[in-house]
Image 1 (cartoon, one colour):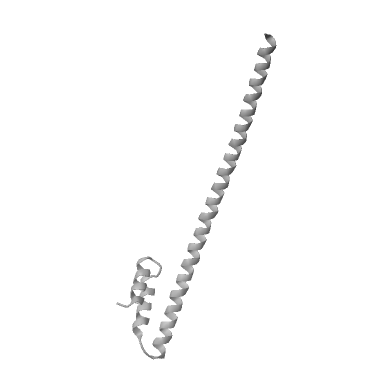
Image 2 (cartoon, rainbow, N blue to C red):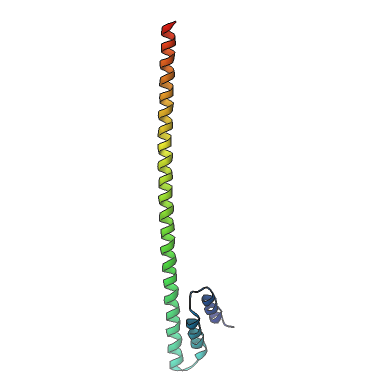
Amino acid sequence: MTQERILILKMVSEGKLTPEEGERLIAALEGGGGANGQAARINSIQNLLSQASRDVQKGLKKAGEILRNRQRDLRKHIENLTRKKGETESNVHRTITIEVEEEGTDHDSK
C-alpha cells in the first residue's frame, strides 16, 4: 500500500475526509496515466490540501481561544493575589497600629 493511500485512509478514519472524498482520492491515485488521470490527481491533491488547510485553521482558532481563556484566568488570579496582598498589608498595619496604641494606653495608665 502506498504512503498516499495510507494517508488518505488515516484522514478518513480521523474524520478529516468523508469516505466519498477518500474514495475519489484513491481512485485518482489509481487512475494512473494520461492527461485526464494527471488532472484528476492534481485536482484531488488540491482538494486534500485545501481540507488540510481548513483543519489547521480550525485548530489554530481553537488554540487561540484556549490561550485567551487561560490568559483571562491568569489575570483574574493575579488580581486576586494582588488584592489579598493589599488586604494582608492593611491588616498587618492595622494590627501594629492597635498594638502600639494599646501599649501607649497601658503605659500611660501606670
